[in-house]
Image 1 (cartoon, rainbow, N blue to C red):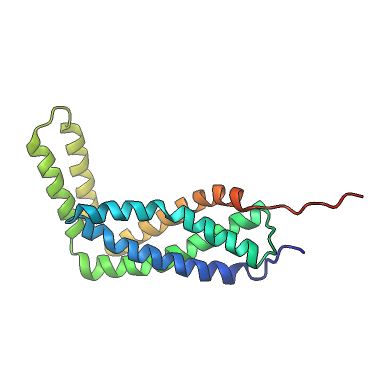
Image 2: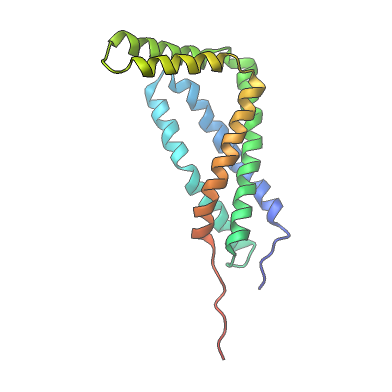
Length: 179
C-alpha cells in the first residue's frame, strides 16, 4: 500500500486542533502560575508532554491513514503542519488574552519577582537583575499583536525542530519482498 498523502492536511488540521486546544488550556495555567507556584509547575509538566502528544498523533496518522508505513519526509511534514495548525489556533487565545485580559499582569508579576531578587542582595546577581530589567522595558513596548506573532513564531520554530525526532521515531518502511 502506498503512502496516502491526500488526507495529510485534513488530519494535520484535526490533530492540530486537538493540540491547539491542549495548548490553550495549558496557557491558562501560565498567568495563574504567577500567583500559585504549583500551577506553574503543572504548566511546565504539561509543556514537556507536548512532544509525546505530537508523537502519539503522528503515529495514529501513520497507522490509520498510511496503512502502518510512512517515510521520514512525510512524517516530518505532517508533524510540522500539525504544529502550525496548533500554533494558529493558540494564537487566537494569546491575542485575546494579551489584548483584553492581561493589562500588564505578567510583566508586573515578573517585575515584582525581580525586585524581590534585588532586595535579597545576593552577590553576583546585579548584572542579571539589570539584564532582566532591560528585557522588561523592551517587553513593555510590545503590543498584543507583537506578542502574539512572537509566540506563533516560537511555537512554529520549535514545533519544526520537535518534528525531526518525532518523524524519526514514527517512520516505518515497508519490508521488501525478496525472491
